[in-house]
Structure formats: C-alpha cells, structure tokens
Image (cartoon, rainbow, N blue to C red; front, side):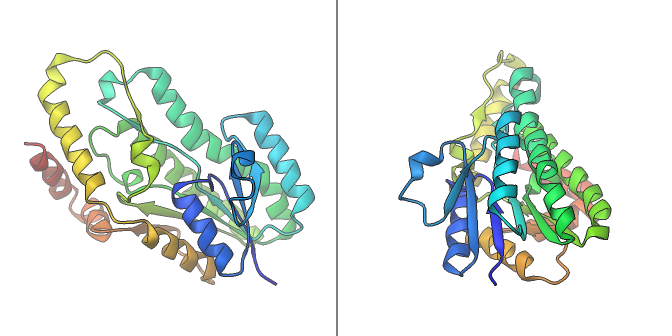
Length: 265
C-alpha cells in the first residue's frame, strides 16, 4: 500500500515540484492551497483548502483530513514566505506577519494533525526550513529568525514524539530557483540614510544569489530520501556549499562571519 503524503503549499515552488514527483512515483499525494479551485483539472493530485494564517481554515482542514484520510503517513510543512529588508527599517507589522505564517502557521497545522498521528502510533513530519535557520545573513533578519524558531520547535518536538514512533526532520535549502524570492515581501518602512550604501550592496548580493541559484530538484530528492529512510536524520542541509556553511557555523563561526562581511565591502 502506497504512503499517503500531505504537502502544504503545494500549488507552487518546492511544494508543487515535490507533489508532482511523489505522485509520479505512485504515492497518494494530497496538497494544500488557499484557493484550490484555481487548480481544478490542472493538478495531478488532490488539493485541500488551507490558509495557515487562518485558525478557522486550519480547523476545517484538520477535520477534512481526519474524515478523508484513514492513515496519514507523512506531513510535509512547506507553506511559507519571505520578508527581506534591513532589520531596523522593517515595519513591525511585516515582521509579525513573517512569524505568524512561517512559525505559528506551521506550528498550528502540525498541532492540528498530531492527534491523528498519535492515534496511529506512527508517522513522519518533514518541515522545509532554510539554511538561514542555521545562520543569520543580512537583509533577512526576520525570515532568518522565523526559521531559527522553526528549527528550535521541531528539534524539541522530535524528542516528544519519539514515543509514538513519529519521526521528525527539517530540510535546510540554500538559494534555489523558486518563487520564494520573486514573491518575497520587501519591507517598505522608513528608509534610514545611514544604510543607503550598505542596502545597495546587500540587495546586489541577494540578487546575485538568486540569479546563480540551482533549480530545486535537489530539495525534492532529499525529501524523497527522508521519506524512504528507516531512521531519517533531523537536520538535512541541501544545495551548493550547504555543507561548508554548516561546517563553518559549527566549527569556525568567525570565519563564516568574516566571509559574509567581506562580500559586502
């Protein structure tokens, strides 16, 4: 019997690519979208309605999952977005929105489905985090902070759920060519003149990273490997130089910081 895999944010980006790939491999894939009717007849897999910023939507979604899915094998938390901008210039409204979606939205969806996973006494939760959940690059302070929060939450959750045979993993991609960057919310607070030259350099460096990014197939591949693994790892960095970034973060943080500062001179 093929596994049933639920993927949030499956109408674009990593989520869509992953859903299509797993569907082709014979898995029973169910995705989510805030507006599933837009994709009626276009998606090869079933789409449930879900807005992770809306408590009523999450509750309705969880009830639908409980009714229509007899056994949920894998939850992939993929939905989210990115706020960019200098920390001091970013409006608090945008910063709070970043956490409401990336952290609290992800937590609420996970908690809404945990009763079913606990009842089954088995399951798997895979959450798409980011390499910036391990480091803190400029211009991504609130996005980075939201992903650090995600890392901490699931790091603790994996220990609590081990007794129920529920495996927990996170995936930490570097830059990839998806709609994450193009759909980013660029903070439009009050520009502070002291940052003018620095902002230009950071924006140019960020754009260079997007322009040179890989296509996202490696992220799909690593999630597929996590699903197939008997004892999946918790942390799974993926992409060019991700291994070096993690190594420097753990063993030579000053070197990593110097490298980031040097690139902005």
